[in-house]
Figure 1: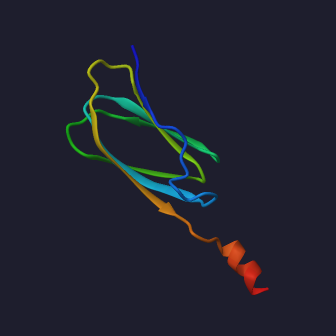
Figure 2: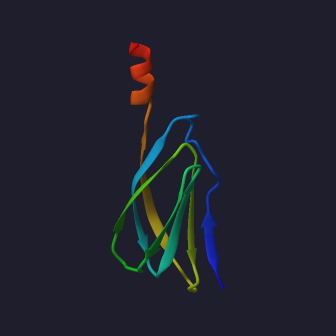
Figure 3: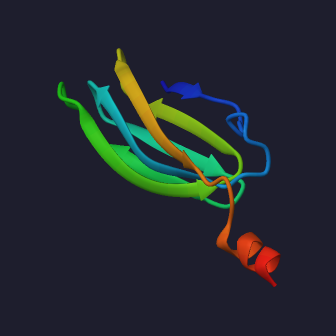
Length: 100
């Protein structure tokens, strides 16, 4: 048995801009796995079930983001996920080139 919730890839409306997933807050009643995939990396986090809000420092980055929660346990409940993302609107490299 496996429950899976998976998002598609998204640029969050900011095409070709680097995004930084700082943290995810959620309540997961039972053990589960969070997978964050970007165009640059894949990060996997094992979450221990709890009735309390958990805060995961993820530090994932990329221009495209996808999230997947999976669990092998029956009656898994994941609620109130809050994903904190920073979008870099410019890069230091681009600004240096403009100054030259």
